[in-house]
Length: 467
Ligand code: ARG
Image (cartoon, rainbow, N blue to C red):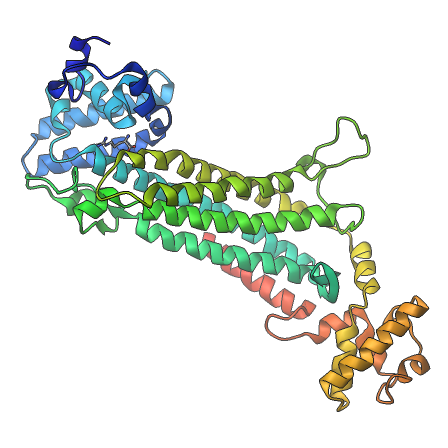
């Protein structure tokens, strides 16, 4: 690039030599921030309309700007638009093209604004819509989970602590635990969107502008809840992006835990569920293999999303106010976080309703691990034996059952009552798996009755919500 080219560039006036070609490439963001073109155009239209209504532009100029921006949008969408690294970013590419199309009116568009408030506006607009899309996918997944929970309300499986069989639960109950995790995530996402939806436009470079702009007008034209209150903060704040990434990291962490469970359950050792073939892949060498690739990959992708959160936190931690070029590094982690989260939710929402339980294996597993031992202890407590003593009695019964290679429910009454005279024949009601789960019939408990109530309430709520 020669001197003449450079002096014609955006800031050429002050410079004695052209920007180094490598530096130009190094500092450019057009390769990735072109993704913000729609938001950039919307922001420019709102700004132009405002400039016209306060008398800085004529109505005719604002009209030309709209016309030019629409043309540019069409060019971008049809792939005709040529993006240039020399023009650094999405903002200057579009402004340059506009001036090329409409001349002087295009040159006036940047009155009373800066790329600093422009980029902050664009990212906020983009993230606001992106959160809407992600929130919809989350709701779709929650509905799928609640519907499956209703179908599986009576299916018995072992519940675990330390991945050791603990107590029998219903599969529906386990699924509703997933539902709750996602429900909190949904709330976090919507709450974060409130702080995203504030307009920085008009903060200009950092201190505001000498023109009599109307920030309320641009904020409301762009659907923001209000204009921001401090111009320095407006151009230097990326909290909203960090908050989104932290919420995304939590959602991914939840999806990763669910994935891990699916992977374990689908193993032939557990054999609790079947994941449909279309969500799995085979092995190039071992013909018998069916690998749960989708949940494994989601578990893996959690790493990159967590990483992006750390990137953004680190990006911000030493920046003095107001805008610094460091901030250009916010976009790639943010975009990748949103894409990864959306795709992972989509995969889960498609997959989960099609997961088939294997009730016989689940039941057999619950039967194996002395999962009703707590029920025996509770039974003794109801017969006036203090809990600690009951615990001891059951411990002895389990040790005996292990010796006999039997489950507690398979021991005879004389065998059981040798450990406590309080044990009677009604003990067998509590030692069965069905007896155990249906006894936990209170809010939040695993009884099929409770699972049906909760699952139905969730379904009604979500269906009402999406109407
Ligand atoms: N491409 C820049 C970014 O993404 C736009 C803002 C540039 N502002 C500046 N003063 N250099 O942050």
